[in-house]
Image (cartoon, rainbow, N blue to C red):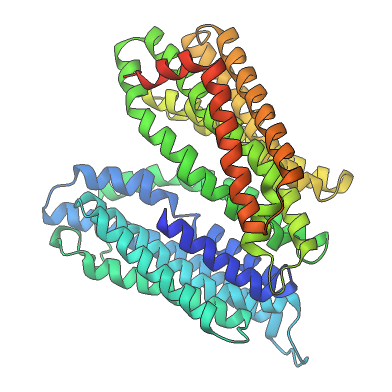
Length: 481
């Protein structure tokens, strides 16, 4: 939570300095591009490397396989980055004597800085895997907090900060984090030494497992990068607008949705091991219970999002007009979250049954449809295609996931119960919004105090509504084992 807060504060500091300007667009596009490029190989750390670490023995043969695999991941990513930088340098700067930097040239220079930074983050993810396997969870977070704080302090104390300085500062914070993680890894079993045992059978097995993960990652990174490319065609500031809105949504997802699902997943898995009927009941219960938190949170965000953005960002070069644009993006992104909850629980149900192929197939279908929608929709409805894209993806993925799950285990108990509980949750959320609106007509202090009062009133009204209409359901959820 603390890392998320520091990250948000750093974003607000950047917003104060650069608003939704060309410079901020260039920075955000460069950062997104480099994250996408490095993350082509990044997912293999979680899906291939960590399972190998869990079963490897402390012997030279296994260490050679481990180090050869890490060498391959790092080398492939290095070659991708180097190829990009060489081609980009020739395209943008060979024989170019013009004064000043165009948007494209500035973006390319920023990708060079942030590309190096993201490469160190790949190394950090590998070191993090080592430390997690060694049970050193706290030191990972401590180092992340320290590096985030250092970059935040530099940004807020530096007068007339340039976008290049901001990129270097954030890049160096990733380097600090990487170095800290490397020095924290004292286990000789995981000490990295470059190895080139390409002919080893186990190494080749790991690489075969990596290929489908990489292909899936490539398609996913296209869906991440494509909205940023299209956003630039609609004018200055739209890339930054998406990033600011995503920053708020990502905090909601990380602290609420991901934590909820992580806590409930073990119980769901045990239920599937005992009985399919029991598991189906738990699945419906958890979906309903999670959305009892998420839907009112979204309703409040849609209603109070303008004030939240105003408090977080509206100062310096971030104007009130910028607030309105970010709020519009935030509304569309928020609407996808209840479907994200349902989708994630459905995917977890497949994982609990040992089926990892169905969620991947589902994701690939949705990603292809999303790419088509973005490409065609941007010509018909303009920037609204970018706003609607996450909602479309979440809805489609939920529908396909439910269809596949129904084929596998049958209807999820009483569908009427799920519809009923969601209808009650939506009704209670609307009552909450009506109450907040009423308070907004009579309470007029400064922006921060107003926001705090509205949030407190909203929580109290929604809590009262739940006690009146869903008390028994909440008791059932809390007693679930």
